[in-house]
Image (cartoon, rainbow, N blue to C red):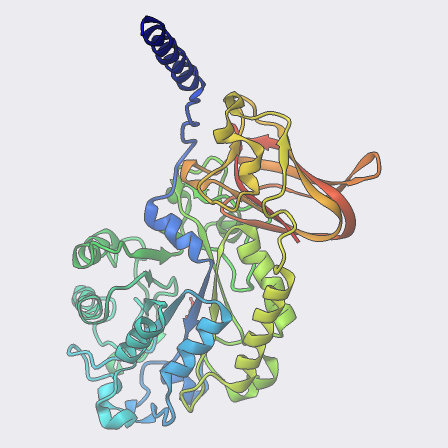
Amino acid sequence: MKNRIQLLSLAVFLTTLCACDTQKKKVTPPAPVGPVPSEAQVAWQEMELNAFIHFTTNTFTGKEWGYGDESPAIFNPSETDVDQWVTTLKEAGFKGVILTAKHHDGFCLWPSKYTEHSIENSPYKDGKGDIVREVSEACKRHGLKFGVYLSPWDRNRADYGKASYIEYYRNQLEEIFTTYGPVFEMWFDGANGGDGYYGGAKETRNIDRKTYYDWPATLDMVRELQPEPRVIFFSDAGPDIRWVGNEEGLAGETNWNTISNDTLYAGKAGISELLATGSEDGNEWIPAEVDVSIRPGWFYHKEEDTKVKSAEELFDIYLTSVGRGSNLLLNIPPDKRGLIHEKDVAALKAWRKLIDDTFRTNLAAKAPATASAYRGKSPDYAATNVTDEDKNTYWTTDDGTTTAFVEIDLGEEQQVSYILLQEYIPLGQRVKSFTVEARQGDNWEKITEATTIGYKRILKTGTVSTDRIRVNITGAKACPLISNIEVY
Ligand code: FUL
């Protein structure tokens, strides 16, 4: 009996010892570096692909910017089928839809009680139609998020430029948020002021873009109307996401999510370049959104039916937007019938197929991985975290180690054409430069290199045959946190 008790105490002692040892091994995670994203921003970045829908009287006049004097009587999309829009977009892989509830011409796609210049005075459904409601409901039906573009510039309103217009604009925001929400993204367009109809005045009106709209008060109002889910505000300068500075589908090759808001004002020299690249030492997290149209114009024009971007062009845009750590907001404008045109549908289908075919088999999924160093030699931060297909785990190094490499064993010789990398952004964007090498016999050959990674980076490597891939982090703001590497 005595022996048994002695044995038991020994076992308890040993277990305690082991527990202490494991506790000692618990390595602290890295501290955040620089500005970090809010949860809502991370969720938005994970959407990657959203669709823009430009639709108004311009669709019927052939204009891009309506003057504001268009009669609502011309708005008559007699075959409108918003389910066709939303299912087409869903099948193409979009996660959200942003609709121009009102463009610069001031015509409202919902029966706003604050103006006569709306769908209520159009022949569409005998004035009983409401495209904002239809699209928001179709999005709910098909599981896409619904977003709104409401042009601050209004070329129809007599009081544009006066204080009362701001009240009008806020009333409309309130109408939209209380009737059609939740809204995932609110788009505040940067085009503001200029010539217009303005209730018959037909003149040029310029506003002070910094003060006229009193944006902070408007944003507070909207946040109060919809505290949850937290709406993402887009404008040239944020606060949640920024314009990328061009409408060609190009994020910067170097693309920081960080930027200093006070450096962002229209007209500043080099502003487009700054918007595309962000700044390494920026004091806020404001990722770039890449907005571009599938056609030359934002609105449907018959003569552009032959100019719909091809699947290959759209694929290139995917690589220069999502592949550079930004979200893509691709505009697909319904035609006069109220349908997404057959040409656009075909291009989207072929584009989706190209993406699916290219990124079908991740050669690195669950592959063994090793690293030149990993944080505190703890399995929590080991190299295999980059191939475990779990976005919440990452490979990282000790504090102060800003250069290191991770090596992925593909098991056998494989044809490699693309590499996809992701940083664990909740703790800040860090990587400044990296190279990718492929093992060729006894040598390592550089197959591509780049600067930033951010939420996602996809690089073409040029087809190469190899059994091992090495990613060298050659510069970082602090220890790099890589959550995912995929090889295709
Ligand atoms: C611009 C507008 O002027 C265009 O018409 C379009 O809406 C585009 C998305 O933003 O600033």
